[in-house]
Image (tube, rainbow, N blue to C red; front, side, top):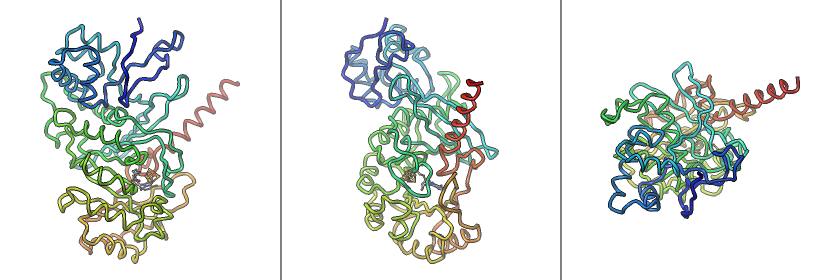
Length: 412
Ligand code: SAH
Ligand code: SF4
């Protein structure tokens, strides 16, 4: 029998009426609520609404949290510390769901990319898709997570910027990207008795960067809740020092990011002056460089050990001269900073070229001599279009050609 939900839902993972689980043949019924991405408080509210006694709530929340985030369980069956009846009751109204993996690609350099499909907005429509990338390196493994489908901003060198914003991701969809990566990398303990992975050096996913599709500070609350779940000491346990949020410069949200998330900050700077930055990052017209750097100077916890990363994409004849490099180091004087030079990754129809290697070296020299460690970010996973700024393009193209093939087959 279809469960009747009469509880007012204010959480961001709230269900929509779609009739999906009935195959669309019966009357529409609410989709089950995903427990992934609910904060501890929201989980407690759900359990209270289910009628569980007040004195049990904390313990039950801990049991669920442990099953979902320490053991990577995908349903309530395995959480045997809960009674059989309670598991069945939970199963009626809730689920432990990840985004659906449509495709997983592995690059020759070990980089992995997942194309994931999210729940559709309306019944019968295809759900929007996002991409998540895993980059293994010596001694660390970084997961690059998306925060939005598309982006409202229109940075001229970024492929995501050519796609309209479809929607913000929910906390469950943001945390879900890490769960999918850990599923695929076999990173869950095999049984309940096995200790959970405590030593961060033994892990496959050691770091997270919010550098996938979208502008994380335009989806502030959901990103905040998701990152607080990811860093929870009793759950996924990724330290805030190993989580970096990259922003194109949404100045008013930067202090909040420091206070309410407290993770590492990366700024997509890309130019040493407003004239060039206005063209590359149009948001600069609203929040110019001086205001952006002021917000950086005031970022809570900023000190030498916790420096801000400034990202700088190398565009031939646009921002890559030795004068630009000198202006850049003058600009950042006094800010504990790392400078990350990113060779431009082209995408179909992109209006720029990547700087020549020799020019990148000259630029990096100036930056190094000014005392900054300035790693040039080696493009990873280019063969699977997983490099910065390339997300989505290849899958859109290929899926279009697949659709065409399918159509031709139908007509034949
Ligand atoms: N919206 C956020 C985070 C996502 S973009 C931001 O802009 O910071 C992550 C990083 O990839 C940013 O530094 C962005 O400027 C960079 N990037 C985007 N397109 C790129 C491209 N084609 N080549 C290289 N880097 C790119
Ligand atoms: Fe959006 Fe970041 Fe791309 Fe700019 S660089 S369009 S903010 S995803």
